[in-house]
Image (cartoon, rainbow, N blue to C red; front, side, top):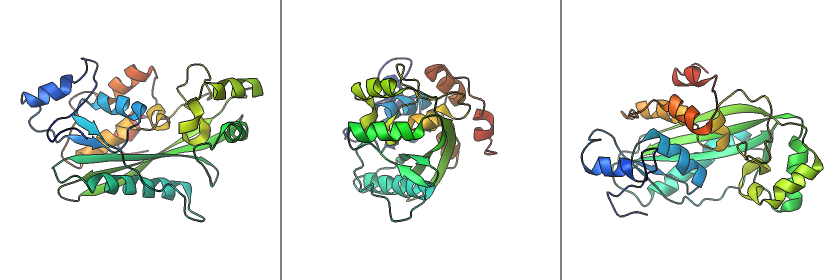
Length: 247
């Protein structure tokens, strides 16, 4: 973890620019964040809020309970990650913890165990629509105020070939991802006709987080939907309903 009071952020204005501005008093009313994840893609997305943050590991047991529903599972893990991160923090910061779960019906599809498992998962999803759930927990480490919400997106996979599956697995990309794929992978392009929250499937639903932060008295200084769409090169059709909480 960074030393107390030092926060790292990447923005379009250059590395650590928001942290520098925070130190100069330009963000006096913004409570800093702690991301309970060391995922590079989550750090990349959270930086778009232009709120100072640091990233810490939140190691928990991710084994599903017997019969646990996918959304309940994702919500539980996001809460446990937030609590794990909070155990070492007493400062007035907001912890952001997420869990992204891929579900084929009521079946939770976790990270693949090996190449054979990755291939089996990708064949199972091929040509079908499944669900991606990212549960987000915000926790004020000082006061204990907490809220958990879930972003849920339908994802239809294209009819990719076995050869494409094998080539994708050779890149090594599937092994740290629930469902054995990244929707944003430039070489594989697994999804087709997607029309929901792209950032959710990437693992950090930014508009949901911006909306949740309002309940903690925090308002991002930039236009989050526009920043997100520009960054991921995606024309989002649902951001207005998400920001208005009318999904």
